[in-house]
Image 1 (cartoon, rainbow, N blue to C red):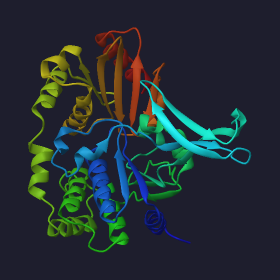
Image 2 (cartoon, helix red, strand yellow):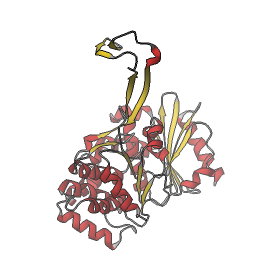
Image 3 (spheres, rainbow, N blue to C red):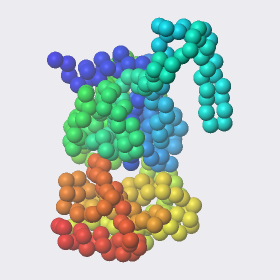
Image 4 (cartoon, rainbow, N blue to C red):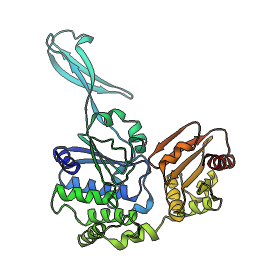
Length: 372
C-alpha cells in the first residue's frame, strides 16, 4: 500500500493542470508554501493556478510570484454544444458576436431540429486540486462555496500540519509533528525531483518555517526543522530579508489601523479573551480597507499569545461583522451566536443584526462570560 507521500507523488506526476487552494485567512506559512509548490510544479512543466479567497498580507510582498495568487476562479470547465449529424450533415459553422450574445450559425444539408442539439458541461479544467493549510473545506471560503461541484468531482490532495484537520482529501498528506506546511512540502518536493528547490523556492519555504516556529523559538522546532532551515539557506534562501519583512517592516497603514483598534481593546479574565472593535472611520483615517482585518487579527494574536479567544468586530454596511479565533476550535460549540455564522478551522466568522458596534462589543462580552 502506498504511503500518503507516495500517493501525492503519483497524482502530481500524472496531472498536467493543477489548482492550489489556500484558506480564506491564509497565514504566511500557507501562502509561502503554496508559492513554493507553484514555482516548483511550473519548473516541472505543469500548468498551475494558485487561489485564496482573501488578499494576502502586504508584509509578504517580498515573496516571489505573489501576484500570481488569484482571489477567484474563472472558467473551471468548458461548455459543450453537441449536434447530431446522422440525418443532416453540417457543412459550415460560423459565429457572430453581439453586445450581450454570441450566435453560432450552422449550415446543414437539410433542416436541423432542436432535438438534434444538446447542451452539456465539459470536463473540469483541473486534473488535481491541492489544498494547503485548510483544516476543512469550509475554511477555503467562497472558493469552495462557489465551486462545490469541482471539489466533489476532482481528486483532492490535502496538505496540512494541523492535528484538527478533518482528512477530507482523497489523499491526506497530514503530519501533526511537522513544524509547518513548508516542512511537509519540502519533503514532497524532494520526492518529486532532485535539485528542484532553487533560491526563490528556498526563500518561500524558509519563510514558512520562520513564521510557524516564531524564528525557531517555539516548541514546534525539532532537530529536523533546523536541518531543513540550514539546507534552505545553503540553497540561497534570504533569511535576513524574511526576518526583516515578517517582523520589522510591517505596513504602516495596517499598523495604524491596529493601533486605533487597540486603543479600544477590551480584555476579559474568564475566559481569557481579547476584544477589538474597528469603526468605519478607522478605515477612512488610516486609508485601509477590510483587507487589513487579517493583519489586525494576526497582530492581536501575536501581541496577546496567552489568551483563549481573540475577537475582532467591525461595522460593514448595516451589520456588525466579526471574526473570533480560538486556541481550541471546539470551544465555538459553547459560544451560542445566533444568525449568520460559519466556522472555518480555528476561526468563527459571524454577523450581528440590529446592533451598533458598541452594543455588539457588550453583547459578545456577556456571551463569553455566560458561556464559559
